[in-house]
Length: 386
Image (tube, rainbow, N blue to C red; front, side, top):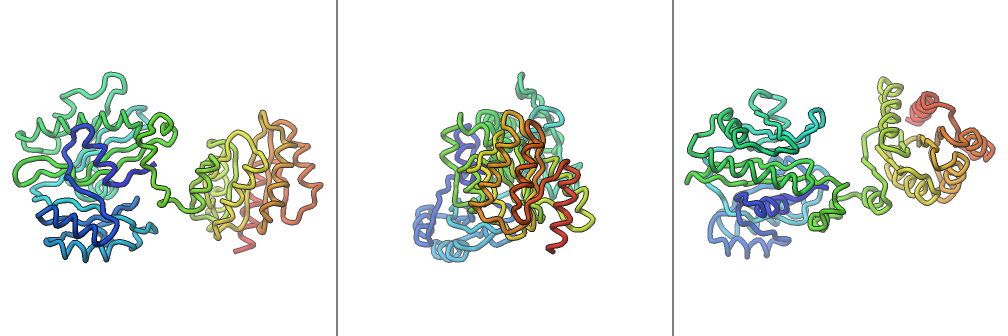
């Protein structure tokens, strides 16, 4: 779950990280009132769960309340990378002497969090890594022992941060690590962390990504979820407990199990990439395959107009293959499938399940014996419909 900038910075403040005391507005008139109350120049910042707001014109400096209102009028309602701006953050403008990047994320290869810092803040970390990877310094955090003071010093030294800022920087690094750990975050970053002209450090922008699986033990953060940022398909998937990520391909994948879903996507790419064909989504319906869950999954997949064929790959463990087959057929009748569907069943009663599907004689629905066969059939079907 992604947090908006104002939500991330409010969370940072709970751990003692210095942030601007901004407020959120939803209308130009609210923006005017907040800017007038600030009694100084303000920055009007679009609140959307997408990067590149500045380049899209979603961040603007206003020297007067009237100018702030005009900026809000232009920003509210605009689209940034497919996200509609519904609110703006009004932050007091800061006098910036230097911009720094500071973030922490999970390093799965090392099985521990990694701190990342760069003296070239203010731009996306991916851009820094692409153009000047040596400009990023890293420190891994021991998940048991935690952060050591010398690690923050090492980050500051490697960035050539003036020594007079090392203590304040170290305190912010330690606070960010605590915030990351206690929030069950996958990412927490400050970009930029600025040194102001009066020699103080301030987190001007913030971003946090919370692990969805941890939300039941993070009710305070779960309450911050902004459902308006989700598409209709994503909302439907979340309500049904289905893991769904939309991609750019033509083969709608419906699978039970995340690992099997990834393998299914890889197989469609293996046989389809040279022909410009690939997976349209990641979708994991979980351990079971009840008719209602399958029907919801099909509605989600078919809401994507780019889908030319559905590939259903189900491994029957506790759930028997014949039950899965009947559930799929019932779901297809409810959803009125309009594109070809390839079904691969393995596991308990898989042979009987395939027989049920074939005996149903429904047009456009075919059973495959192996994943290789299913992937090839799906790619061929998608290519024929392009």
